[in-house]
Image (spheres, rainbow, N blue to C red):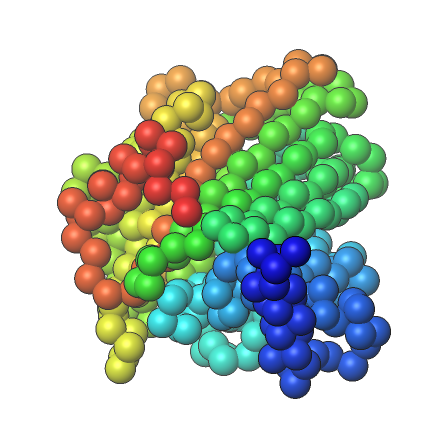
Amino acid sequence: MYRYTGLVMFVIILPVIMLSELPARGVSESLAAAFDAHVKNVHIVLDKENGEAVVYLRGEHFTTYQFHESLRIPFLWPVHAASGIAVTRNWPMGTDDPEITDHPHHQSLWTAFGDINGYDHWHNEPVITKDVHAVSGASRGTIMARNLWVDDRVNPLVDEIREYIFYDTPDTVRYFDQSVTFRASYGDVTFGDDKEGLFAFRIRTEIQGNRKGMLTNAYGKSGEREVYGTPAPWMDYSGPVEGEGRHGIALFSHPDNFRLPAWHVRDYGLAACNFFAMKDVAGKDEEGTYVLRKGEELTLRVRYLIYNGEMEHRQLQEQFDLYARGEGGG
């Protein structure tokens, strides 16, 4: 019987140590939550009533999935680098960028598209959250959402299953994977050749290309003029933050996606990975319109790499190669 003594002492002592940190709620519930947060490096607190799922990495706030019913579309905000600096623009959700009030539909880090059966979810139509689940873990945590993209009369157009996987990552690098699966449950779905979309972020104001930042693609080309539209496996947006060093976001497209994405990127801070705008953005002769027949599915996968400190082109390519091989996942 004595061989269990150490385990018993651990179970007894750990909650005692954490009692000072417990919130004012039922003791058993509080002890369970404290123990859960202690053993899981990626801890996600899901609050369906307030429409948010808060992601913590080793006790530090990484990001929050915002899906309250008052929002037109769900998005991630804020998004913190390991340094603690927010790397996406806070406006219009926050108030610390009062001089930058363009494009209010650019909400930190989001997923939307400008032409689904002729309807524009980039600017106008809503993406309705039907359900959200979250799982914490020692090396990774997951948010799974079931969404409905609708027309201007709230009639359903397409179902979407969205998954975020957040990893326990090194000190200067954080990354997470996102996948979306579109399911044509209500009839054929046409993704038009349109520049607005699909996976997108708005970089922190200081890092905009027309300020101190720089856009660079997988082929080593830099600046909006050189990288806009060019189909490429990845794009980086980075620059210095005064007093805090260099910060950036790189967006990787998984090799299994059905084609290389075109890049709708701007010096005013936008970076968007678009799989359909082959003519509107990439400038090709043939349109990128994609028709999903009723009952079919289309899955698209990307990784967001958030970093602070210097990250050379070679290092970014190495990170992409890890993602492409299914490695480096926490």
